[in-house]
Image (cartoon, rainbow, N blue to C red):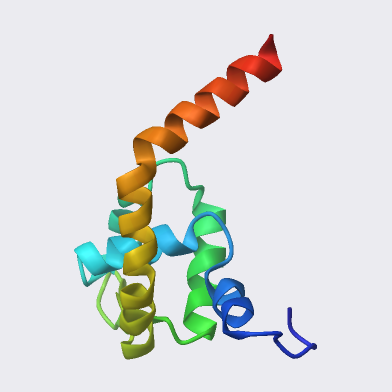
Length: 119
């Protein structure tokens, strides 16, 4: 959405967390505040290395995630939430609670729709 003004706050927030993996990266870094790339990838089954790198770079550019490079041999890189990332996670908590409360219904509805489309 770069290049045009945001319509509202939700527009700006969705631009930052848009994509399948960004909110899951935020969740993983909330659960375990400092993760190396491989640890983060294991926390997110199904994400490809390429996509994870891309999503982390975008979150870092938006100052949501901090990338710390340790000058060691071999080099070590750790990811953590910034203060802005922590506040974004807090804003997403009600959405997560809503999903948890309605998860069974959502899964049942999706399964029913999938069955109807196949048949």
